[in-house]
Length: 115
Length: 116
Image 1 (cartoon, rainbow over the protein chains, first blue to last red):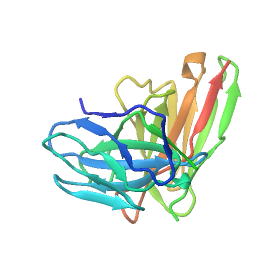
Image 2 (image 1 turned 45 degrees about the vertical axis):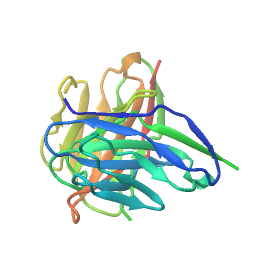
Image 3 (image 1 turned 90 degrees about the horizontal axis):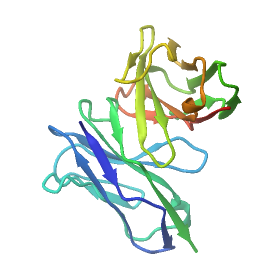
Image 4 (image 1 turned 180 degrees about the vertical axis):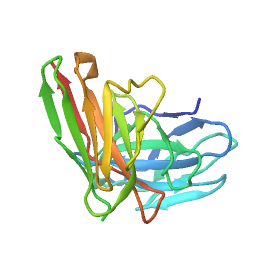
């Protein structure tokens, strides 16, 4: 079946450091890929998405490129802030492109950004 | 906009009792709501998909009689854990799909259930 694997956390960085959170997937066909973020005490929020190979999703300084050849969707940010501290989930979906269909999640990676 | 709430945020109950968790879309109508379960350091696992006015569709391995889902209106879905046991202790998360956009899921903050 479909699955998503992402790096274990927690990841601890200093403010303004470069961030990479790895995500790889296993799926048949052509899934859509997503990154969700969960801030403390809040629900998951869609951070960015990509619906086909070589697409780059971006939002709030975060980027991820859909790499079909390596089945990856790594999340990057050039300079993190304390306010980026949260749990990040990689996910895939097949069917509707907006995540409205069934989502398969990774285990989540906690990011802690310190001053 | 697109806010989803859950109530309660946490609940502790005795083994054998039933617990109801509510999921509400506060500022939009949700034709479809999803219920997930999350164990510590594990991913969210979809339990069931709930469509307003019809029976929920359960994922393989999820007991329908154990986890009762009711989606009675376009803004409310409930999950009832019947005859709860300690192994049902978990973090339950709902999401709702916006009727107007028809695509993106919006997530609630989750409910922590502890069964003693």
